[in-house]
Amino acid sequence: MTEPYTPPKVWKWEGQKQGRFTSTNRPIAGATHEQELPVGEHPLQLYSLGTPNGVKVTVLLEELLAAGHVGAEYDAWLIRIGDGDQFGSGFVEVNPNSKIPALMDQSTNPPTRVFESGAILLYLAEKFNAFLPSDPAQRPECISWLFWQMGSAPYLGGGFGHFYAYAEEKQQYPIDRFAMETKRQLDVLDQRLTNNKYICGDEYTIADVAIWPWYGGLVIFDQYDAQEFLEVDTYTKVRRWAEEIHAREPVKRGRMVNRIRGELSGQLRERHDARDFETRTQDKLEIAD
Ligand SMILES: N[C@@H](CCC(=O)N[C@@H](CS)C(=O)NCC(=O)O)C(=O)O
Image (cartoon, rainbow, N blue to C red; front, side, top):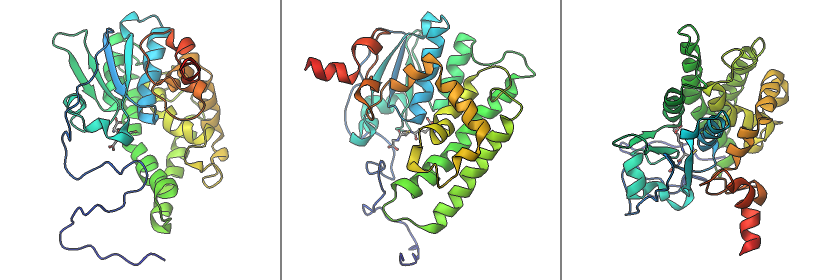
């Protein structure tokens, strides 16, 4: 049993253990070192990593390109958050919050920075008038679900995922608290998807793009190794929806971009051209070396 903790009067940062994926964090914001960001030739410059928040954006970009929006051509640069790239001066200029994903739109004058994955999805959907209903009766529903995802996923990732999978010591109190909330959220989605093909109805929108990497990931990719613990198989409507989205080719491509884990053939660490999916996956690059 862990000793009960009595907080001191004032919290001090003394290099306390923070668990996996958070060891580079500090209680102060801002750059820790000078590091310019690379800039490619495409209108959109994405600085990201293939985590669920990063995948939202690469999936939408691949969907936009597949739908014929050539202005969505993009360079995807790898930001290794485990190495602290998010604290480089160039990255902090694009996102003062030092978290991936971050986007620079070079097609505007001056270039436009966008950070927070939900804001990036909304920006791109509005820019290309796609994957967001224009009907004033349906648009608020879609935006509501987009914001639902942004508000809910931290309980899943930062709450459940952190304490169940990443924290060195397993503690019942936080695991109970966040397992319950995660199951409640899965039930919200399951009920929503009972009479709806997609989150906002018949149309596939940025709400699906935002929600899928997190909750689809839990149900079909066993994110956090928690399928049995959370009985994710009981959320049958979520599974049906997640599998349907996973079958989309742009989704498969978007999942590969900026990915640094898993099968080498599924990792396209940087993407600068549509042909990179055929020629520059990690298995091919390593053979060429
Ligand atoms: N609300 C943000 C969350 C972004 C976020 O948490 N990104 C993580 C990776 S998924 C990150 O960059 N972590 C680096 C760090 O905390 O230092 C969004 O949706 O864009």
